[in-house]
Length: 494
Image (cartoon, rainbow, N blue to C red; front, side, top):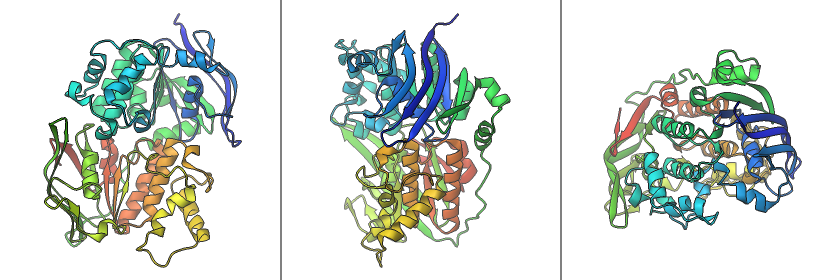
């Protein structure tokens, strides 16, 4: 009989603001078992993971019992919890950008898994772990700082850190959201081969179907169904489970046609761009050309670290290219020769980005209503609108993205990462920009929210906006986009 790795018994969690996040959650995970949690963003999955690690915010009330190796986690002293984290319980955080120390190298970030327990890191351990997870030139790249790594690469660094000590349990919160399909399998296979127990939190139902042994479906902080993976997918019992599975099979929503009469709103001409670190050049974009017309939805997918996010930063003129030009609305906006912005359109809301790090893109001091309506306060917009009007608009946008129950005066720290992602999308839609450039806009979203958001992009395109979407979800792009490109070797392939 398999030994139990962790047991949750009647776990309830209430935050300091009075919000009930979890209600009487009970299940156990056997050694070597992959147990998955699924449900809409904000339903309590990450809260449960943080409860198991003892890292919930101060003044959060937790009742019930969580035991690992007969050690009680709930209300345990901090010293005991620090001894468990890393050695006994590995954790892959949902936000790889926030997990890394920006002033430390990636090698330092991974090696900290040993140093925090006063253990000397084994020689070449970080390099070996990164190589096993598909990072090329690992020895050189691990000496870089996190800001030059893509989200998918940082996610793999977090996985390497979490599995450093072969812990008895790995809690993986969306560990593959920024990875392509091939790397998804590499990561999950590496977990399964260790025979470590895994608590897997993911919105990728295809991945869960393949790798999870059992699944718990959570809605509004309660488990509505728990069963083997085969039973959940072949014979779901609860209506909510059936809705999730149905939404995971997207049908084509893109019905508009794009003709030559549609105005070209964005054009990249012979774009080239590279980064130099320690005299080593990494050329990500090579003489790339692209035209996008009004009302068109363009999808771009490709391997993690291939340059997709870099391309979006160039198209939005957040960065200027080493060579080539970016044109917005028929005007040259960025030029590699002058290395400066040449058009006011980039600054006047003609194009608006949705960043991959949604949490980092939201001002932590601002209320949600202020964040969503920020584009309406730009200097070029006249007349300025009142606070009451802004709150009404924010409320409408929250309803559109499925967050009607979110308090307008809440701060980003009170929301889940998936909810923050939808707030960032609501902000972009509020701008009514000619172009929306979205970097992994659905990576942290459940299948129901994902379908809703993509439908909103389609509506924006029908009104004339051009949409550029970078995603690892190739089937999703093919369902909603007019054109889909694969990024490879610094260029785009149809």
